[in-house]
Image 1 (cartoon, rainbow, N blue to C red):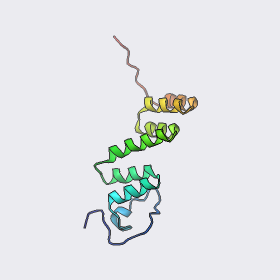
Image 2 (cartoon, rainbow, N blue to C red; image 1 turned 180 degrees about the horizontal axis):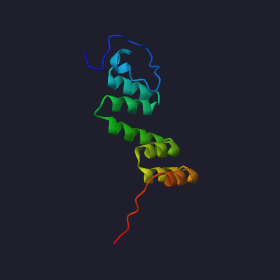
Image 3 (cartoon, helix red, strand yellow; image 1 turned 30 degrees about the vertical axis):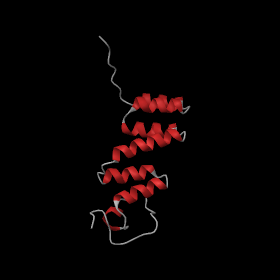
Image 4 (cartoon, rainbow, N blue to C red; image 1 turned 90 degrees about the vertical axis):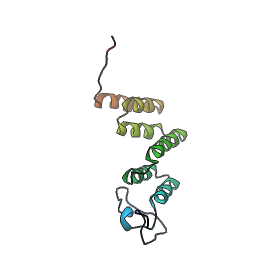
Length: 120
């Protein structure tokens, strides 16, 4: 049995976002199946959480796919929030501005710690 496979089955995946107990024995799904199920239901952040928790080989690629999907669907604000959580403040500001949220961009600037590097 795969280390992340359980003996029981479940026709649907109705888990709270913070619950990772499915990995130990709540559902009869493997990690790849859980990730795909979350993706199919546009629950990308849950899919990424599962991939990270399982140290999945494609976790980084999944994050990139999620950002691409957010951009394709015009969700610059959400993409900016993802970048802000990752600590990529410049990208977050750019995405907030692109999404028409200059106030949110300014808020990132005022709440983040930046180091100003002066040239020679």
